[in-house]
Amino acid sequence: MTASAQHPPDQTQTRRSSGRDLARVQVRAPEADRPLVRALARRLSEGGPDAERLRALVRDALGTEGAETGGVLASLRRSPMVGADLDLSRDDLGE
Image 1 (spheres, rainbow, N blue to C red):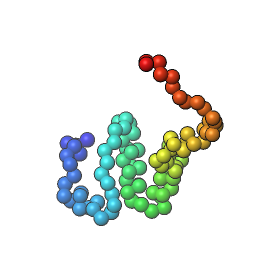
Image 2 (spheres, rainbow, N blue to C red; image 1 turned 60 degrees about the vertical axis):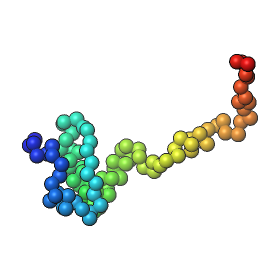
Image 3 (cartoon, helix red, strand yellow; image 1 turned 30 degrees about the horizontal axis):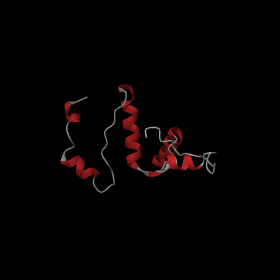
Image 4 (tube, one colour; image 1 turned 120 degrees about the vertical axis):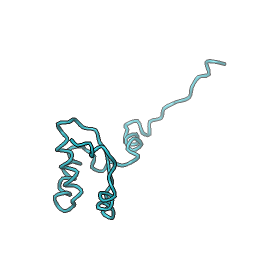
């Protein structure tokens, strides 16, 4: 790896990616996975049907399809204890 990879992108790289709705990200991965991560990022940034297919495969593999906020609350609402008449009052032991 050359030392230039450790420096921030130059103006040419920034211009090249501007207007394409791309974000620069930094990830930590095992050294052996470096070519895989770079190839995946490259294919996703190119767009098109291959990129969409890869996104779907990765989402399925990671189980992130439909991930959204409020998941914990939704889980609690599906609990079998919903609607149970529980007495949650506390005794005042300290007084």
